[in-house]
Image (cartoon, rainbow, N blue to C red; front, side):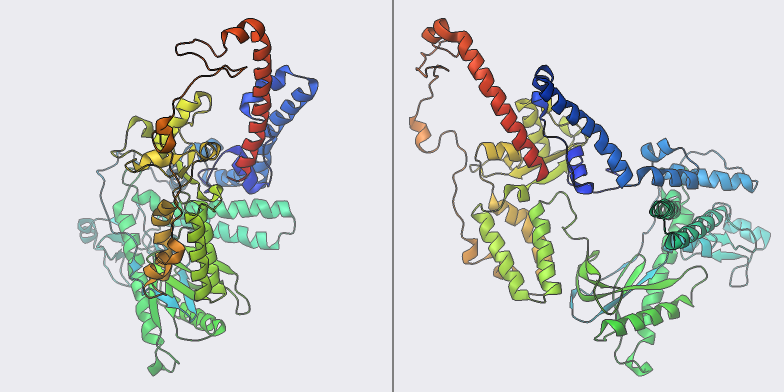
Length: 606
């Protein structure tokens, strides 16, 4: 689950609520013993609790099509299903490579990984940041890295050292025997010897096309499910081949291949930018000069200057077809979508309305912003999503500003639901042993939670949920993290200013700095930022410094003398000790039941 889905919590309760809309039975661990020792009705409740805990994982497996996907991936890659769960991508690629090598009479030598090297990664063209009210066409390379490896025959079996090429009389050029990559490495062309990796990729991509075609024609939901699992497995497997060659500590690293792939990719992005900007100009009969405002690995974002989505789509399709003719097969540039309007904040950070047809926008699409990060509280996601909706869908900057000001004011007045302020971070192995130079808030909280309740202490791999509370001056930041339930039970207020400074301010400034002059002063100063002062917990502040703590009898509430042992005064101990024990035990059980219900309710909000 953690490998394939990004959630704020991976408890069975949280995952079931996310995918099934159901949750576990309302039974807290502390009352399980009492339910078992109780009546047939309480044991029935416990049985339902156990059954549901067993059924929910099975229903999750069916809902998420786990077995179909695992079976299809195992068939494609030739590895056991348990490898898919316990090992990474390398074993899958190695298995396919070994199978292909055996069928073509190759022997793959066993070798140790060479010392790790470095190579330049993909190109990210510097973005022309801003808010664009003209349609922006997006052109994408289909299966960029696999298609580069196929087109240029990049493989272990086709790599040639310059001395060998010279000795064998191998020539370069379009009609020659070898291809020289942009970083200077030589690979023989398919006419001399076809590489194993291109063969593997060709089979994977062709099989994926067949699976997608069959899926489109299928009418049975179960068959569609199986075919979708197969095409996803094939896609993942194809995209893993490049990473297999570039992993310097992997099974068969070959930086000549991986560096050549990224070098070709960079060259293609720059080539696409040049061709588009040279062709789509006023002097060539077009209404506007086109400009590439951003490029990222396998995509370019083009501003053609037109006013309608329909015209941007037409020009995007034309440009993709034109540029594709300049590349070697099977490299292909495709028109995918139009963004209108479009907010480009920085490299790998943008948002816009996503159009695949000229009639109606499909959705609001956002990349690289805080709507998906789990170490931000839910409030950040809600505020950023609503702000983008107001700006992009309603085209109202004033409404967006008013919404943000209202939210900040409510946060400072402690009017925001605490469930919206919960931050979630994973407790990794080694953290509890002081692996970090600076103390981590969630790690220190996990230690405090273990001291309070050893039986329910967080384990390695758990996501620790916490809020930042108000505290006296001088308290370290990591000490201000607190368990949300503990904060509610003890009426501890949250630190609203911390959430503004460390959670909301940066993502909001990224959105508004390209839209609104003086964005910081407009959003984060004014009457709405007036603070409501709330007392922070203090051991010595206020009237408490004049008060003296005393111990009272658990039954009659008489003040006990200093040094008195036990919880009852002498009179109650002699007269009714057994009765008091029974009464307090019954009260405790009633409170445990109440706590169990409240705990389950809180789980639904996570």
